[in-house]
Amino acid sequence: MLKVSNAIERFGTEGAFEVLAKVKELEAQGKKIIHFQIGEPDFDTPSNIKEATYRALREGKTHYSHSLGIWELRSAISNYYRDHYGISVDPNEVVVGVGGKSLILITILALVDKGDEVVCPNPSYPAYESILSYVGANIKFLSLKESKGFSFDIEELKSLVSDKTKLVIINNPQNPTGGIIPKEDLVELSKLSDKFGFYVFSDEIYDRIVYDSKFDSYLQLANKDRCIILNGFSKTYAMTGWRLGWVVVPKFLVPTYQKLAINVYSCPPTFTQYGGIEALTGPQDSVDIMVREFKKRRDYVYERINQIDRLSMIKPQGAFYAFVNITNTGLSSKQFFEKLLYEYNVAVLSGTAFGKYGEGYVRISYATSMENLEEGLNRIEKMIYDIGK
Image (cartoon, rainbow, N blue to C red):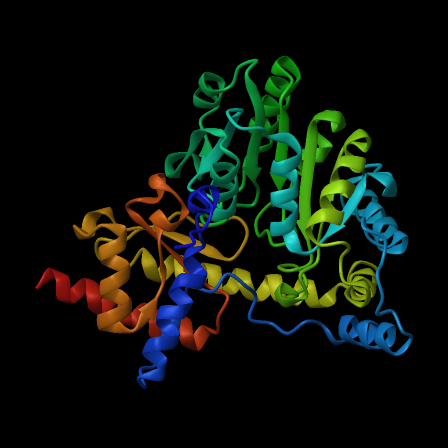
């Protein structure tokens, strides 16, 4: 009997898509499920971006592009860092990929050999651990602590890194917690990178979705020869299905990224890249409107959750997730998730979908309407009440 490779067994998966499949089964049975598991904006892609893409299609921009992305888009990304962060980025340091996930894969393939030590946050976006496990990395988990606003303890980080460390991964703002890493922690990380010579991979896909303070990109603070910055269009411009992202990398790594890009996906889709140019260079009012709405929802969820007996959460500073502490319910994260889904028809994600340190939490995405938020939180409150009877 034919069998798959041993390596494929080391791949993980992503809880949001697994839960979505379960939800679809329940909805097929006629149940009305409140979706709190979806990690994408509930806004449409702005019309100016779609129009620019239609124009590119009409003009025949439907063939292969450069494997690193078209020059005009790489230049627009360079200008993005100049305009938003005051950083000089050469377009030759920009690699455009097929969504952020392909660039996470390429980065790890480019930098990490079997047995290399990599520090990975936990809880965190599942793709990091999944791909690191696939390549056989020696993963050292850095816990994100609620007591520190879901940043890391700098002393714990110091205990994990050494001259054997190849890569440290951070996600800022964070999925699943909504936390933002303070500038002083980023500065300390940069100092450790200089001392021990490891790379830092900073996933900043939510950099524009922040609420109460100015966001600091790691690229502003770090040695550019030791950091890789991931970003993209999915969250900021509601373009999740467009599969368009980018990384800023040290120039000497660009040929490596190009080799991997050619082998993995040849090139990013050509016509969508013209939509990306319009997203970065066109009007930004849609982003401002979306973030204002997310902030209103964030405040509502924060107030409601902390009014429910046995539940608590700290106020998210970025992204569109609430990481809710359920430890006082007496249920594990998986038990809470399953009971809520199958008995009360609300889909959240178990904190353990994001790693072992997610136990005791569930993630709520508030990228949904206020009507859905109110109804879903009412159902959660009812479940907690019923548990306490």
